Image (cartoon, rainbow, N blue to C red; front, side):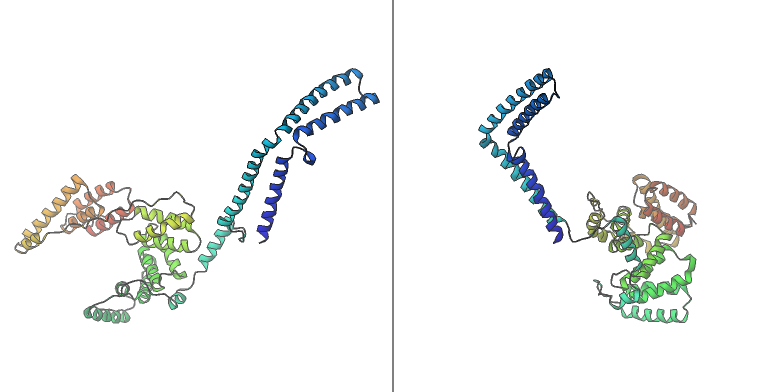
Length: 413
């Protein structure tokens, strides 16, 4: 209230000064022309006084008197003319006064609508410090799990056979807790059942057993399980896992998405925008985080000050890779082992020819590399991998897909 009182008084004072000067040309309400006449008369009187005191020679007094008299006559004529047009001149003055009043009132209304007069100063350094404090003070995982809201997910409906297999897997892992492969299987399957807290515990054991050999994806999966177990909230433990994931794999999609989400919730939409913008432009259309980012990106961009940002056009999902037709499968059943091998070689050859002539997606190149590895054509798989690296040199995600296929085919270490 104090702000509005001060702002209103200042505005009214400025308006009053402007209006006074607008409607009066000189002191005590005299028009400007009449004020000039008074000035020149005072100058003539001053000349006479100086002449009487002997301070001004007679010749100089005559010259000054003539010049001032000439200006006095001109000012008097202007004063008479303005006096006759005084009524007509009030219209523009009133219009100007009305415009000034409208500007003042409009400024007050605009600030009332857009401004927040009750807020204190919020310098950039202070906002960054507050965001860092929020990041340091993320709640603990146990606290979030105890109050976790239900996730908007359909509950898993496993078959009786799967339930039985899970019981056996849990028993096996309990008997051999230091088996990393068992912990990995347990974490993935608990997550598939929606038991995210149990999945996170198994994944934590996997990270402990893996030690320095744990990958960025291992940490990203752990953070994902923690966040889902907390009902979508990000705990201090999840934040630490995300930092470790990005340290090991700066372009990990899962870690990049959740890190952006964490930054947007802790007062750093600028960092969230950079993470998500890069991820959105480098991800395939069917990546699970793409629709989530597209739904939140306009708001995050606005908070980050990126007012000109526009979402990139949504890309069409990649078509699934074509496999053998039912006819091929039926024909293969009647073939010998050598015949089936030749049929596979023919399919691989056709795929290789199509990619060489028409190009294709990274998944198709990866499939060709993997198929050549299965056929024992490691040298050719290495050549295809080198060619694919040149084709997708500007696409880190594609290079990652190709590298995985090359390693499985023995074409890369």
